[in-house]
Length: 80
Ligand SMILES: [Zn+2]
Image (cartoon, rainbow, N blue to C red):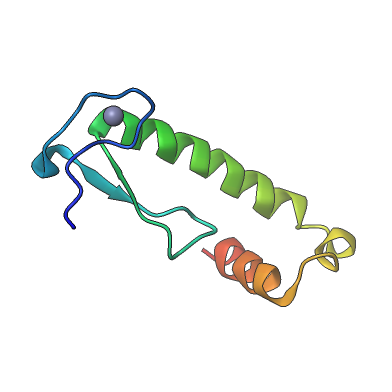
């Protein structure tokens, strides 16, 4: 089914042509449809979390706590 409404909380924006697809940095399978405003908000938040993740696991001693999937993700992100 085609999504026609922004997922933003109590957002009234409708119309598929006004929505942007957003995929979360740590969930490649996630899909969110958001209006421009909510897309920008989400991207900013997402970016912050991503930077915190990269920063936090820069230390090899904290990195051992990551599971294999988390470690691969960290390696991929920190090499960008
Ligand atoms: Zn919205």
